[in-house]
Image (cartoon, rainbow over all chains, first blue to last red; front, side, top):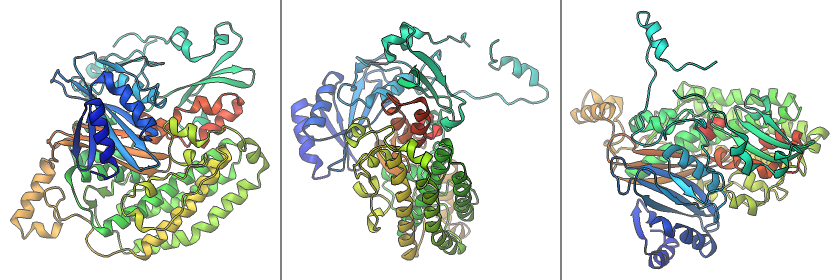
Length: 170
Length: 409
C-alpha cells in the first residue's frame, strides 16, 4: 500500500466501519450505501480528494445479495492518489443516495449507471437515461440482458429475415 | 419493439428556466447532424434572443455497446474494440487497455516496448491535436488551417502504417508489449517527421494568432477556471487552460514517462484561446518527448517473457513442444487473469482516459468500463455556454475537443 494512502485508509475504516481490500496495490473500500455520502464528504474536505473520477457498476447476477456493486473512483490531484469505493446493493431494483451533492460531476456518471444497470440514485437532480433512447426497455449492461446479434441474410432466407428485423415506423 | 415514445416537455422542465414555460424564451434544437458538433451531438438550447440561457446536451447517438461486447470476447479479442472508441486516439486506447490487463496479470513490459509505446502514444496525441486544431479553426471560419493540419496528420498515419500495417485502427500494442518490433525504417521516418514538424506548428500559429476573427471569437469566451473544472471532473487541456498544471504523465507516470524531460503547458485565462494555446504548446512538448525517446531507444525484446499470458515467438514453435502448447492455449482459450479489479489511467489528448477492469478468473473480462474524458468534459457544456451568444456555442464545442465515439462508447 502507498505510504500516503495507508493513514487515510486506516482513519476511514475506523470511522465508517468499512472494509478495505487490496489488490495490486489498489485499495477498495467497501461500505453500505447509507454511509457513502458521509465518506465522500470527508474524503473531499479532510483528505483533499478533490475529484470524482468515475462512477460505474458491476452486476454479479445470478447472485442476489449483493447483486450490484456501484464503484466510485476518487482522485486527489494534489497528492496523486486514487481510491476506489464500492457500495454493494441487493435485489433487482436497487437504489442508493446520490453523490451529486458532494461532487457535481457525479450527475452524468450516475445517469449512465442508471441507464446501463437500473440502479436508481435517490436525490439525483436529473435521473433520465443518457446513452440509450428514452423509450428503451431494460438495462443493457446487466448480465441477464441478452447480447443480441443481427441475423445473417442469404438469398434463400432474405425475405423472412427482413420481416423479423426491426423497421422504422411511419 | 415498443412504440416510439416522444420525450415530453414536462420531462425536461427541471432543466430549463421558468420563462421557457411561459414562452418568453425559445427552445432551439442544435444537432445531431449539425456540422459543427463534430459528430452526432445534440444540444437543446434555451435562448433569450441571441443569448444562451441554458444548454442541455443529449448524447448517445453513437452508442455501440462496446462495454457489453467486451464481456463476450476474451482479453485479446476485446482489445480490438478499444481502437474504435476514441477514433482519434486509438493507440492511447490500446495503451490504457494493455496497462489494465498488465496490472491485472502482474505482467512486465520490456524497456524497448515501453519506449516505442511512448513514441507512438505521443504521435497519436499529435495527430489528435492536429485534427482538433483543423476542425475547431474550421468552425471559426479559418478554413486553410484544416488543409495544413490534415497534411501533417497523414504523415503520422504513414508511420502507423509502417509499424502496424494499419493507418488508424492499429491494435499494435498488446498486453505484455507490442505485436512485433518496429521495422528498421521506423527511426528514420520518425526523425524526419519531428525535424519537419516544429516549423509547421509555427505556421499554424502564424495563421491563427494574426487572425483577428479568430482572436475575437476565442478570447474571453466560455471561461472556466480550474477550481470549477476540478469539481466537475474535468481533466486535460481544459483544466490546464484554467491554471492548474495537472497531467497524469507527470502526476502518476506510466510507461516510463518519468524518464523524459518535458513541461506541462498552462494558461490562467481559462477561455477558448487559452485552451488553443495549451494544445499548441503540448504539440511542441510531444515532439520533445518523441525525440528523447528515439535518442535513447533501447534494444532488446518487445514482448514479455511470461508465456502464460504472452504468446511465444514464431521461431520457437517448430522446436519447442512447450511453446506450441502455450501458443495453442493462448489462441484457443485465451489467458485467465486472477480474480480482482484494477483501474488504470493515461493522459489522453482530451484528459484522463481510464479503464476499470474486473476479472472473475475466466478468459473473458467480467466487466470493462472506459472512463472517457469526452463524457466528463461534455458535462460542463451548460456552464461553458450560459450567458454567451449562440455563435459561441460552436466555438465552445470545438474548444473542449469532443469525440463522440469516446463519449457514447
